Structures are given as structure tokens and as C-alpha cells.
Figure 1 (cartoon, rainbow, N blue to C red):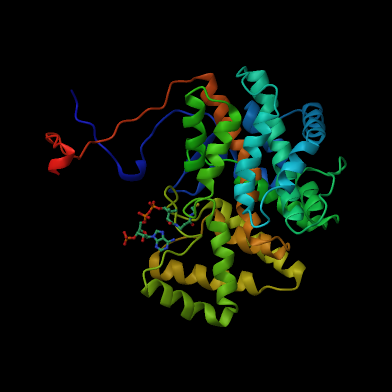
Figure 2: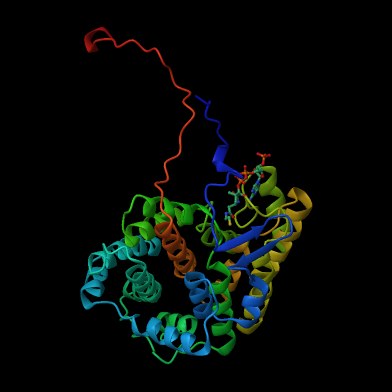
Length: 375
Ligand code: COA
């Protein structure tokens, strides 16, 4: 028998093959189905990227037109789901509401336990269409406001901002938000995607797999970092204080959210775009404070620790400049990543084998049972 070996945090351990996403952590390259993220941000839309992730090829004009319509047609939530949201405690964190909301959507889906590729694609589409509606509805309900009905004329990104604020976004905001969704759509075997695949590998249903993923994304070492980043920036308050703040934090051995990555050892290619978007949206809002503080922190983290910003660092100031509340940042990450999670669930279902690794046992092996009255 071979002795099991282990790698803390599964660092660099390859657990499966996959045709969906490629990361080169040394060169800072990210590809979805072979297409460079830089090309996709410059030339594509979120809807087209979702199609690409699920089907493995870019759509024709006709296919994309039909897909965009289908997504828009499935945004509406059942009134029973809206009524359930109204019963949630007002302090319910949007990420918890989303986790519970997705679970709830599963109970209302008649195809819940149909694991055929066709049914799975339909469920992936409904989930991707309805998660933004859940997030926007809760953001309003918790403040005593009525949810805003989706607009069939608006694309996925612009429609979310419409449902959240009840007014049409500027062209810059809509385009920037669409780019953010593209940038967050997939990232190989990150923790939440792995969680989704593990759940799917037991032949559990897609809603359970996505619920597992949402719970995993929530942690501050993963998607929850973007909310912590904006709280840090707001705490620093002004660019002039940033250098002293970060030096002190590093002296105290604090972990700075939005920096470092398990796979990238150079600039995260997503951060390159988010830095630009943060500046553009700061200018639009007439307030570059958060962008400027971020620049100082980035400079110091590079000089002191050799660490680069990851996807969560500049997305925080980008969303803040759009007027979005901090605790919606991670649900927005989920709104995009659901496309990747479901692409991976489809791939897992197509070539399934139960994911069941081993542990290297380090506990005792010859413990002698002592009756309870003699312990
Ligand atoms: N701030 C300060 N130090 C950091 C750091 C950060 N953000 N990220 C890593 N480090 C340091 C660690 O303290 C550790 O130093 P040590 O060896 O002197 O103890 C070293 O770098 C390695 O860190 P480790 O946590 O083992 O790396 P990892 O590969 O397990 O972790 C992350 C990767 C992403 C979890 C980690 O970089 C992190 O916690 N970042 C902040 C959270 C975040 O932004 N998450 C979103 C990721 S997209």
C-alpha cells in the first residue's frame, strides 16, 4: 500500500482535467475556452461569455440573439419567492439571503432532479437569469422599498443596475459593470468551483451544488475579500493617510485583503482592467479618493511584500464608485461566477466520478477504551 502524501491547501495539486479555463500564474494569463480575457473584455459581452463557457464555442449572431432573449425572459421571480424574501430578517446579509434564495429556487424548479445536459443547461440559464433579480430585490426589500421589475430591453449588466437603483445606468456604468461580470465569470478550480464540483460529483442537484459554492465564496479568503477591501479603504479615509496606515498594518502582520493569490505570482490580468475601471468610475462620480488610496496601498504592498492586487482589490472601489453598498459586492461576484460554476457542474456531470480524496491520518492508533466511570 502506498503512503498517502498531502499538500496543505491542495496547493498546485491537479485534481481533474478541464476544458473550461486556463490560468498561467507566471505570465499572468487567463483564458476562457482558449480566448484571452483581454480580448473578451475588449470585444465581448457577459452574455456571450456565458454562452462560450457553457457551449465551448462563441455563438453566431443568431445564437447570441436567441440566448440573450432567453436569459432576459427568465429573470422574473415567482411571487412566492418574493413573499419569502419579505419574511427574512432585515439584517440578513445579502450573501446569506442569496445562499438561502438559491436553495429556495431549487424547490420551485420542476426539473430539479433531471441531470440530462439539456435540463442542466436550462437550470443554469434560470439560475444565471434569476440570481441578479434575487440580489437586487433583497437590496430594496431590506430598506422597505419595492423590487423593480426587470427591463427586457436592457442587457444583463445594465438590467441589474436598473433593478438595484430604479434608474437607467450611464453608458459607462453599464459597460464597466458588464466588464466586471466578464472578469469574474470563471477561474479554474478556485475554492467555490471545487465545492460545486464536489457536490455535483455525488450526483446531487445543480441548486445544491451552487448553494455549496455560494457558501464557499462568502469567506474573506475568497470572494468575501472585496467587501473587506472597501471597508479598509473607507477606514483609511484619505490618500494622505494610506501610506502610514498600510505600514502599520504590515508591522502588525495583518493580512491585507485584495492582495496575493494562490496561482498568480505576477499581476492578476483581471486587476489590470479593474484598476482602469476604478479610475474611470471614480472620475464619473467626481471622487477619486478610493482609487487614489488603492494606488498607494498597491505601491506599498508591492514594495514591502512583493504582493500584487487580485480581482477583489480594484473591484471594491469600482463598485463603490457606482454607488453600490459594500455587502452587495460578494453577491455580485456570485452573479457572475454562477456562469462558471454551472459550466463546471455540466463538465462534472458529463465525465463524473465521485470526488473523494484521502487524509493522512496523524491521530493515535492504539487507544484503549476506558469505561466511563474510570476516566
Ligand atoms: N497580506 C499580507 N500577507 C500576505 C497576504 C496578504 N494579502 N497574502 C499572503 N501573504 C503572506 C502570508 O502572510 C504568508 O507569509 P509567511 O509565509 O511569512 O507567513 C505568505 O504570504 C503566503 O501566504 P499564504 O496564506 O500561505 O498563501 P496562500 O496561497 O495560502 O493564500 C490567499 C492565498 C489569496 C488566500 C492570500 O494571499 C490571502 O489571504 N489574500 C487576502 C485575501 C484575498 O484577497 N482573497 C481573495 C483571493 S482572489
